[in-house]
Image (cartoon, rainbow, N blue to C red):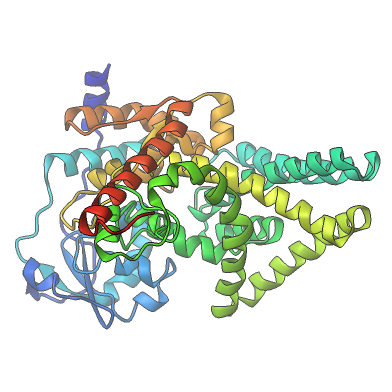
Amino acid sequence: MTVNLHLHWQTAMCQKGENSKTDSTTSATYTWEEVKKHTKADDKWLVIDGDVYDVTKWANRHPGGRRLISHYSGQDATDAFGAFHRDRDYVNKYLKLYRIGRVDGYSRRSELANDFENMRELTKKMDLYKPNFWFYAFQLGHILALEILAYATVRFLGANIFTFILAGLLIGTSQTQGAWLNHDFGHLSVFKSTKLNYIVQVFVFDGIQGAPASWWKYRHYQHHAKPNVINKDPDIKMEIFFVVGDTVPKEVAKAKTGFMPYQHQHKYFPFLLPIFLIPVYYTVEFFRYVIKRKEWLELTLMILFFVRHFYLFAPYFGYVGAFLLFMLARSVQSTWFVWVSQANHIPMAVEHDEAERHWVHLQMHATCNLESSTFIDWFTGHLNYQVEHHLFPTMPRHNLHKIRPYVQSMCEKHNIPYIRKPFWTAMADILRSLKKSGNMWYELYHMLDPANDH
């Protein structure tokens, strides 16, 4: 089967030419050595399809954030650009303003690059970027229904410990499913219009969840651009509580910058991060972010979220009880979110950036899939198809399973590990990888200074 699948996508109709479509007449050429020098805050170049762009001034106005585009300074951003921008012709109208020349002798036509480009064209031929609006209507509908059911439970059954816990579970479930839906709109997977995706994302994330969509975009796009890359992926910068991978534990041990007993992190992870992350850390960061960035509309919607919550539940549980209900729901969401999201990444490679690494290698080293079933697809928001999602981030999640066999075939051809785990194995691997990293830190820390004793 894999041979047939490979032949099918290998003969996909169109291969993109190497010449950039631009009206610019700039004929300057640069060597890669020259391009690699321009990585500073006030001097940033990057390459797309062999064309060199000076994005220094554009970086601060980039819709995905300054850090996102800066992560590819001095590098070839062709595949990242293709992954994040569905309408490349439209974006090129603005991009060409920053073109300053071309890389001398540019070529990226490796066999893997050709195969992946053919697969990208195949996803278009298969119409895999077309959303099923009934699917998303159900997602939004059942999120709202869970919120209404939580309130109805308390109103009609009265305020007691049973309804308190049940309402917390219902709201937490709604919040988690809302996070998956926010993820869809944030990746521009639902509507053709970028603006419409963002408007609905603000409604779902700010209005229903009390969290800023701009904050999500700022962090999450960086994660996708450089997953599990040290100092570029914000999701792995956890040294305040955890060290992950093989490199971070060594660097923290040598620098002696950590203060946690990391050799025990696999023991305190189930109690600390899931409970602390969203209810405390993220909630504070949400407000700090929107105030610092002067996102007043989002701040207003977030305040209205809390007004709504206390208006509905304070009459039954009091203000303290309503606050505790909020914390319970956030804890449910945080626990659910942490275990699902970390299963795809923490057990994978965590490394420093390698500019020459192809997009497929970059994503496959940092991601893995979980098994699939109707329940697990719903439970994980289809993030169990993390590999396909990272390769094609704008693809609607209900279509990810359709491209999976072709991705597996490509990986088999190029001897790239394609990891797909049973659900509970993936959960256990989080703890196993944390234990390994923690022990690595402990051994090196004590080897460097035997007097240390934690």
